[in-house]
Image 1 (spheres, helix red, strand yellow):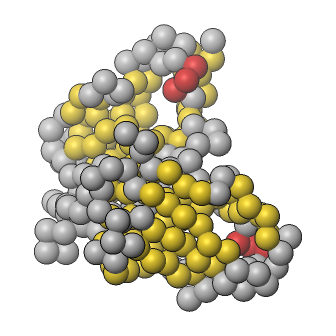
Image 2 (cartoon, one colour):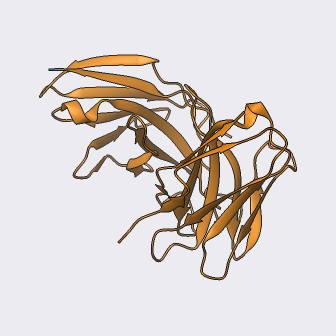
Length: 115
Length: 114
């Protein structure tokens, strides 16, 4: 499985933007970049995913480097409810075009949001 | 939509016993995966079911087994429980497809082995 590298922790102030980096230098052409987050005492929650182009949804934006070896999850205005562990995961498209859903989690980035 | 539901939410078992955990996937989803999350660690993939068959398996012993039913719901069974099996067990559902699909997780079952 392709691996990702994330900082152990980051801090932000409420209502400020947050940029969470992820390095994935061994990414293959068929890997999608996924982000999940896990709030305390809850299961992981899907945030966003992309392949090559930048992506936006109601929760966040995903900026993908041109060479795809790194990406950044952007929370435009952090709130206290965004305090969580954020996981960057590569999900493979291969195996005959079928992915059976395996997600390989690392340690993630612990995001602390200050009032 | 109820999302992914797991039962029970908490469970205490004695070492050596057997346990069954249950998962109902999000409506419309046909693929179910199970994860084990030890305290302070990221979730670790146990196995994944599609069309009632185990399709992928992580590095877990045969004491961990599962089942998927025709309605796509799933069970995780753990035999001969060890103290080290104490963890949060998470179920995730998704549509079968490539990397371009998202997984939805339940709230998990907290298993404590004493």
